[in-house]
Length: 271
Image (cartoon, rainbow, N blue to C red):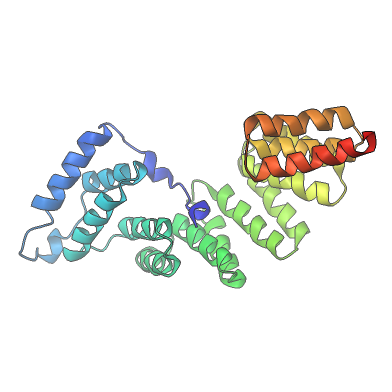
């Protein structure tokens, strides 16, 4: 489930304090501001921006126990905020509790139906659960939101969803749309190369793989893709070098295993 954790851009805003200082302030706020025994009047049940920012800093630092304490106190104070509900869903994903995450994301969307990041992440959970129709609805909601700052992510996820259903042409269109929005969006260049390769469009596959390599030159999967394309184009020396680059970048792992298999296949005729 970790792979479906989408990095919300809000996590990176206004970091004027160090992480340690943020922890101190967040802990203080939990104990002194939200931990009081009396119930605050409804007009005081507002989440301060500083408290929210410190929650985000703690989340990014992977101090999930502190985040959970803050979220608990927020709930006890009767504060309803779509941002903290989203954060609650993210923590649930990390703890591999997808149903709890789904509930949190839906609660966030009940407060703010236009919360594009929540739609996108909820769609990713549904996709993992093979609830394809629901996932498609969420991705479309996110991609159609004019205020969404990173709609390419939603289009890319929609492309992944279509690929899972063997709808390659629809997937291709989604990846192209993502790149139209953000020409340097690595995931869509990478997946486009894979689709073109499956369609035997090796020149187009090579073009997209090269673009992906320029964006992320140390990604072993890119070099594996390049090797496969060079092999298909009967450029054996270039293919061998690409597969060797995979092993260099990732001495062990799934990409390396596949690269080693390809190298063994290329060497068989010479045995």
